[in-house]
Length: 100
Image (cartoon, rainbow, N blue to C red; front, side, top):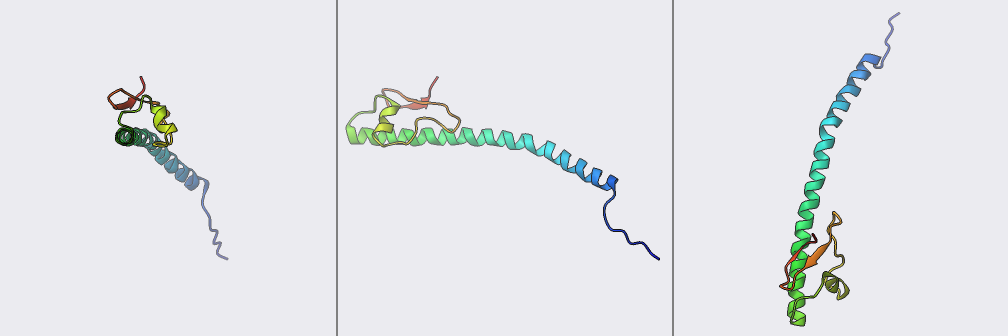
């Protein structure tokens, strides 16, 4: 009688687990690095958006807002922080930047 046992041996399973572990070790640091890059680019884009809203505020009110919170309370923006939780500030000339 022929024995036809189907399945994987322990060695085959260990090799597969080793390959998966190596792939995870190579990909996880890259994903973390790209998340930081995405946050930075998102913050830059948000600064540009707030800058344009400050310009719109000047067109509507005749002057730049005193603080970034003024833009929020007047309904020009919904938040005063970037996606990485850094707070924005606005100068008297209407330049928007990250708080020091």
